[in-house]
Amino acid sequence: MSEDNVVPPFKYWVILLVFLVSVISVGSAIGFQTFGSGFIENMNKYNLYEIGRGGRLLYYETPMGEKMVRVDIGFDLNTTYNETHGVAYWFEGIELPYGSTIIDVIQNIHKANMTELRVYDLNNSSVFERILVQDPQSLQFAVTYGNISGMRYIDEINGIKNDPATMAQWMIYFWDAEKKTFVYLTASPDKFTPAHKDTIIILYDIFGGWPADCCSGGGWEYNEYEGSLTR
Image 1 (tube, rainbow, N blue to C red):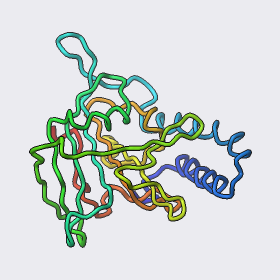
Image 2: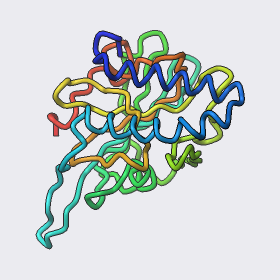
Image 3: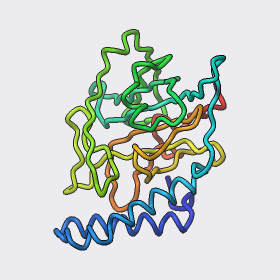
């Protein structure tokens, strides 16, 4: 996403986050313990408020009165399908109880109503083909989580691990229906509670002091995604 699409207060949080990473990298553990815990907690609260998730979440009720949500999630491991094409994984319609978190969504991807690969041209990622997966159980995602001051984060998926030296890391994006674009999510995956028809993208890329352009029209394999309005 471009900087023009991000409101100034959010820039403030990201800049401070980069500062925290720098503090950790030079081994200032004492400073991080005294300052980092409160900062991360406040950053989570602010991010939830900014994207409209600070209040009551949306859900639907079953005939039995159960509150449920149906969520989509995509994974881009930055891996290739063959020499000329990359691949992303898409799980649609994962049904979970209201109050579930992103971690719950990840752990229940095989409950998706539909699973597909999106195989895209490495030279033009806006050109992609959808391939329906007949055996979703064959797709396995081994996810390892880290923990900073009680906040969990994705550290590794299928052997692809966060690399502080290169700033390559797992990033989470959320479809903002009002802005009609994906926005970078700073809230921890165990704190963010998806609403009904929410869409989450998990992307491995270079942070570089600013979140990588995910799907906001920058030539990515989901840049034409229209979210839950199509369902």
